[in-house]
Amino acid sequence: MPSSWELMNSSTEPCRARTPRCREPPSTKLRLQPCKRFIVNSRCKVKYRFGTQRVSSMALSKPLALASLFHGRGLIVPLSALPTLARAAFMAYFLVYLKVNFGLAVDQIGLFIAGFVLFSSLVSLVAGALTDRLGPKWVIVLSPLLQSAAYVGLQLCDSLIVAFMLCLILNLAYLASETAVRLCIARWFGAHQTAGVLSVKYSLTNIAYAVGPLMGLWLHSLGGNPLLLCAVMASLLMAAIFLPWQPSDSGSDDSTPQETMRSTLRSMVADRTLLTYTLATILLAGVFGQFHLYIGQYLLTRYSVQQMYEIINVVFITNALTSACLQYVLGRHVSVEHFARWIGLCLVAFAIGLVGFGTSSTVVGWILFTLIFTVGEIIVQPVEFLFITEIAPAHRAGAYYSSQNLTYLGAASTPLVAGLILSQASPIWLLIYLLTLLATGGGILLRHSRKIRPTVLVDEHGDGR
Image 1 (tube, helix red, strand yellow):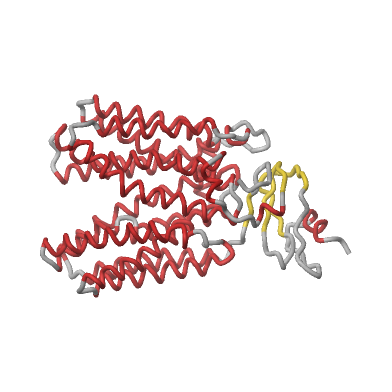
Image 2 (cartoon, rainbow, N blue to C red):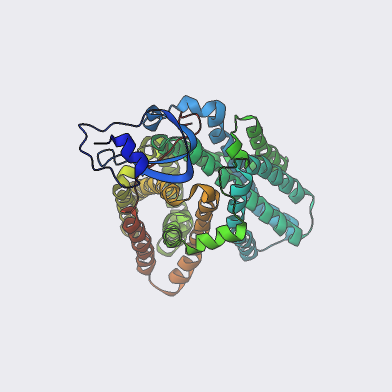
C-alpha cells in the first residue's frame, strides 16, 4: 500500500489510508504549480499550499514569538503602525483644518470626508490588483512617499478641489499600504502564527488611534504644524525597504502567473464566494465599524447632553481598554480549525452588546455591555482576514485583500441610517436594523465557514516567517 506521502503527491482528495498515526511530510524541496492544494490524510485535516518553496513540518505548528516582530521581516508589523499614527493625528486636526482654511460648515465637512473615504475605498480594488503585479515591496515603499507628499501638499494648498484630490490620494495610498502589509503577513507567517501577528497589529492600531488625536491636537495647541509631523511619521514606513525581501515580494517571481487588472477584477466579480463574503463584511461593518457615532446619536434621544457625554466617554474608554488588554490575549487563538465557533462567538457578543445598549439605564450597564461588544469586535477582525486568506488565489491575493476596504461602505452608512431612523421613528427600530445587519452578515459567514479548511502557507525558508 502506498505511503501517505505518495498518496498526497498523487491526489488532491483526502488520504483514506489507515495509517497508525498522522505523519507529517518530510522537509523537501518541491517545484509545483502555485496554489496547488493537497490534503495529507483524513486524520491530519490540514491542507498544504505549495509553490516553489521548502516545506518544513516544524514550521507548521511553531507558535508566534513576539520578539520575532521586532527584527528581520517581522518589523513590517510595528512599522505599519506609523502611517496609522499619522492618519489618526491628521483626522483629529482635519476638522479644524477644513473649518479654518475653507470655512466649511459641519454638514459640508461630513460630505467632504465621506466623499474621499468612500471613493478611495472603491478605487483601492485597483490598487490591490496593482499590488499583485508589482509585489508588496514596492507598494509598501512608495505609498508612504505619496502619503507624505499629500500631507505637505495639504499644508500648502488653498483650493478645496486640490485638497479633496490630495485627501483622495492620501487615503488611497494608506489603504494600498495596508493591503500590502496584510499580504506580507499571509506570506511570511505560518497559519498558527497569523492570528497572533494580526492581534499584535490591531493592538498597535488601537494604540495609534488612541494616541494620534492627542498628539495632533496637542501640537496644534502649541502652535505647531500637525501636517508636517504626519508627513514625517508616514515616511518612516519607507524603512521597510531594508527588510530581507524575497523575489516574489517585488513582483519578480516568474513562477507566479501575471494577469491584467481587467482580468483580475473580472475574476473577482465572477467569484460568488468573494462577493457574498464582501457583502457579509459590509453588513457586519455597519454594526461595529462606527458604533461610537450611532451610540452617540442614540444617547441624544434618551438622555440630556450632559448625561450623553458622561456615557459616551465611558463607552470610549471601556472600548479602548478592552481592545488594548484583550486583542492579543484573545485574538491570537482565532483559528480556521474552529472557524464556525469563532464566528458564532463573535455574533453572540455583538447581539448581547446591542441588546444591552438598548436596555441599559445605568453607567455600569453600559460598561458591561460595551466590554462584551468589544469582544466581538476583537474576534471579527482576524476572522475576516483568515476567511479571505482561505479563498484568495495566490496570484490575486492583493486584490482579494483589498476587498476588505469596502467595509468602509458599511461603516459609513450606519450613522446616516441611524440619523434617519432616530429622527422619524422610535429608537427600538435602530436596534432592529442593527440586529438585522448582524443576522444577515453573520448568517452568510456561518454558511460559508463550513466550506473552509485550514491552509498552511510556508515561505521559501520554511521558517514560517
